[in-house]
Image (cartoon, rainbow, N blue to C red; front, side, top):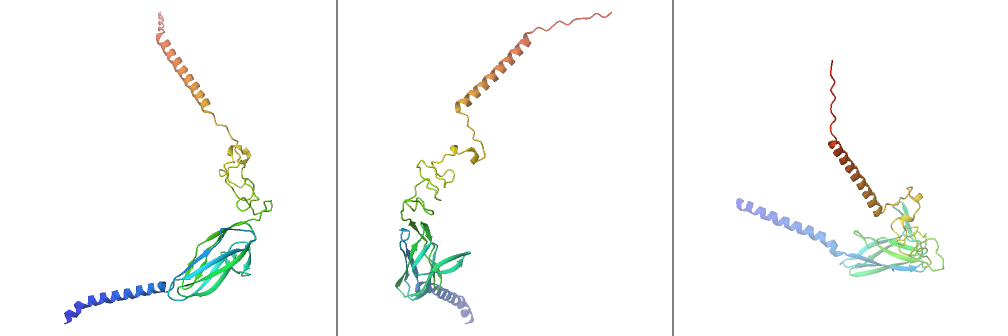
Length: 259
């Protein structure tokens, strides 16, 4: 009997181990299956300065239990707040950041839609960082951007450029490099980025180096030809001199009688 019991112990131990692993796996999967919150934010591609900009955030819970969450939306756009009237402010990365916050409960298999309205006060391309959702964990939405266009008034004002305002033309100092071939050198472009800006036309004082004109291919060939002729002539003269010395008869030696 003792031998049979000892033989069964490894099998019993393995069965218990498998049961424990199964329980742990079920506990890990259960919270994820119980509450599955997802979010989607909708933004317009562009809007005019001073016009209402409506942002909507859709929160969905595809799980089987309710989820209490806090939604945080950070705003990095110069704008007036229409709804809600004022944002909250906190320090983030050493900067004072405006943000909106909602606390809500989303039931199983249901969704909620949040929205806010801004009125942009400056043209430009502005980014929206990911929406933050805090519940049993922290999740993030996707980032986005909106192009705020100017209201045309016939003049290119500060902050306006050819990308966000039809009052501005290419090739002017507006803080934006247009990269366009328009026969105008854009002063906002770095060297080599605007096809209309030629490096050769820049004054020497820009770089501190006096530009030099490289020799043409024909001039190089002429120099090489002259050098080759000179070398050949020198060699011919040297050969001729050697031949002359070989042909010249040796002089007779004078004998001097000694007394």
